[in-house]
Every structure is written in C-alpha cells, then in structure tokens.
Length: 447
Image (cartoon, rainbow, N blue to C red; front, side, top):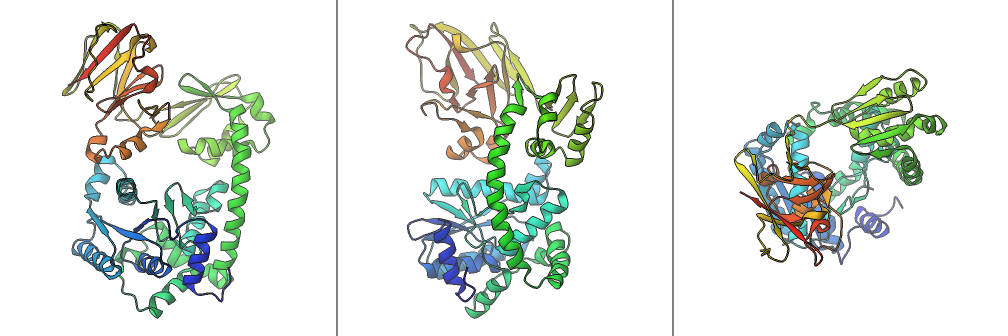
C-alpha cells in the first residue's frame, strides 16, 4: 500500500481490495468511544459508507462507563446516524458462567451485535482493530504456543464481522485523530499492565521497535504471507484428518499405525486436538509412547485420550454441571426440576397435530430408544423443521430466533442416537417430522 496516500485513501483502497465495507453495504460499527473506533466512524463518514453505531455499556467502571455511553450517542448525533446502546451486568454474567470478565464482555458483545445485525438488516459488523492490535495478537499467540493460524493474527473477516482498519498502524490513526481534531474517550484500563495484551503493548513492543523501528511494516508483510500459507496448510490438514480421526459412537479413534506414517504428525494432532485444550507438550508425549504398552492417559478439562493397542481413543468429558435423563419407550412422564415432559403415542390417522411450540409431534418409527434429554451445549446442531434439511448450529438458531440470553441457559434438547430430535419449546428436527407414510406418532408435551 502506497505510504504517501492519506489514511482515508488507504481505508477505501483496503476495503475495496478485501471486499469489506462499501457504499452498498450497511455496516454496524462497534464503537467504544476510544481513539480507534472514533477514527473508524469518521473514515466511514468521509468515505460515504453507510453505517450505524452500537455501544456496549459493561458497567465495569461506574460513572465512567455511563459517560462513555453518552459520548458515543453524541458521536452518532454528529454524523446523523442511528445508535444502539445496551447495558450489561458483565460481572454477574462472568460469575454465573465461571469465566473471566474479558471473556464475558466478549461473549455478551458479539452475541448482541449479531442480534442487532440480523434484526435491523445490517450487512456487516465492523470492529476497529488495527495493525498494532494484530501484531500484539501474533506475539500473544506465540507466547502461548500456537499453530500456523496464530501467526496470521486477527482475520480481516470472520463471517459477518469485518476489520476495515486492520491495515492501519496506531501512529497513523493517532495522527489522523489530531489532524481532524476528533474528540475521544480514554479507557483507563488501556494504560494498565494488568492484562497480558497491555503488557505486550507497553513492555514488549517498545523493545522490539528498538531492534527494528519499522516493526509494523516488517510484521505486517509477514502476516499477509502467513495468511496465504495458513489457507494451504488447512486444506492439507483437513484431508489428513479424514484419514486419521475416525468417529466411533461418542469417541474418536486415532490409528497408531497411520499416525506413525503421517508426516508432520505433531502439527496435524495439534490442529485437531487444540479445541480440547491439549498442549503441544502433551502431543509430543503422546508421540513418544506410540510403541509403549497400552494404558497411558492424557487428560485436559475437556477430554481424555487413552492409548490402546492399536489406537489413541479420544473421549470428550461431560461438563461439570451437565445433567441428563433417559427417556424409555414406555415412559409416560419425565420430571426435570420444575418441568415435566409428558409422552403419549397415537395412530397417525387419529392424531390431531397442532402448531404449539410446547409440543412435539414425531414419527415414532424414526426414533431410537432410549432417548436422551439434556441441556444444549456449544457445537450442537440440527436440521430445523421447515428449512429443507439445512443444517444449523443451535447457537445460531437462537440468535436468529432472538431468544434472550437468560432463556438460552435453560433450554433442553432431546436426542435420538446422537441426533437432535427437538429443541424443546422451539423447533423439531426435519428428520423426525410426521410424514404421509407415518404410522405411529409420538406426542411430547413440555410443561
């Protein structure tokens, strides 16, 4: 990108080249009121890109948080655009879900943004991440131990989320802010070394810039290269994974003989197993015992791997608060806390099917007993009735249906032979619907 161009020119060029924001794409801008998001608003305005503003008040800094919200409303008034502000009980959400404040804020933020985007007909959600954020992310990933994905840092686009300023170094953003006399709000936490990213920003980056004053240019160019390499790497890894990770009932079997013959076995294992929190050290230990006797175990908070004679066997561990019950074919009623599930069978000819979300009408011949009723979890998917066998993750289904956060936590699903039959109180699965050739109908009523 030509260094002699203005930030606005670079912004328009970057978004055009990457097919991100544009004159025909209505974007929802995530605006905190800090320097980066304020500059992003001004660039969108001057580029002629249509936008509205969304601001999260996480209620973590008392009156300062409220002042941020008022400031962002004034920014929206300045550009004569819509503004959406939502207040969150972030600390309470973090405590209830046993997660960090940072993760709680992230989950609340992005879930609300997506709900806004879909309900208000925005094309994209834009965040103000810039080049220095990306560099910090790469360094952070390296310190934790990363695969090649971590070397490309923050992606320019993730589904509906775009980063239209990822090309811009912090100093150019700050210069633009001063030149255009833009007002902003400073988050006090940005000046603190309490968080890992801030330690990298305030302590690590300055040392690296002493070594190479052109650090942003040097790493920025490499990130582009790593992005291309990652695409090739992922394609090959997916092909290897099909041969190496074999689903059997609820477990994954990894043939030891094939593993021995796999080039870059450690990398392939890491890419597959990292979602279960296995570290590169554990993977190296696994590879070192390929010829040992059976019984060696490798455990994380999410999964367990046992070495058998011919396989490594991966078993996902149940969540600590996970509760489930079996539904047998002859059961008439199942109790779950304050709720009850009532079951009855009728001939299809006499069944009077009604469109009531608290009821499910199912082709009994398609069910495999016992059924299981449990709370839904991340990764669950089904084929919603009426969507012509279109697969959808339950989390995305909830967003599309605008299910409130507090209700999502208490939603149950019923499954048959590891296939979701009914998202209780919401939608059955297309695969189990009553069809013209159905003989017996199982009626379920949730009370």
